[in-house]
Length: 176
Image (cartoon, rainbow, N blue to C red; front, side, top):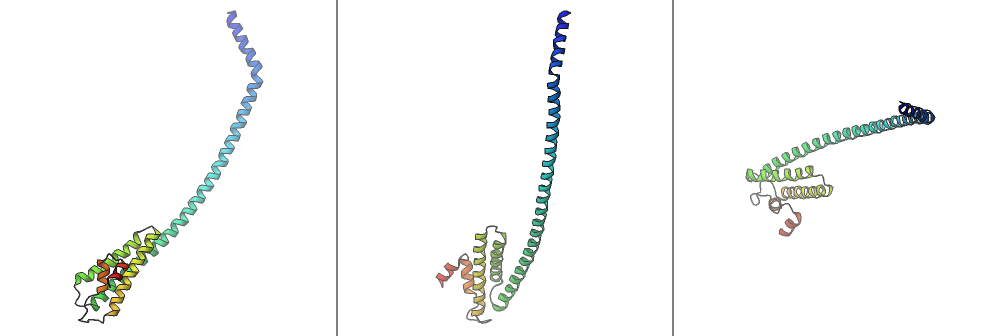
């Protein structure tokens, strides 16, 4: 029993001697925990603020993109209407032209328009726009060069050459 008492006494002495240190560590631990908690709350508030800024910015960008998208759709519909009007103009101007050729010209113009709309690469978009403009210019030149219903030239030859050359204006210029 004395051995047990000695151990208990030693343990009690150790606790008494280290009591101040342990209280100090416990107090410091609480202070550090409070500081850490305050820091975490501060960081949480900063993150919430930054998140709200990002949300606000994203909502603004989304609203702007929606407006642009609606305008793009409106512009695209206007282009399609203009191409349909052009198809009717071709039909009126070249009355002897087979309907399949009229649809081929119209379809080719629509494909060029779709290439413009579907590409995201700016350089490619500009090249597609150039092709579309070259095609439309060639078609308009064909319409203006030949009097309506002229039996000598019942086909928009330059336009058809441009389609058959893969819409490469340089190649079409070389053929003329």
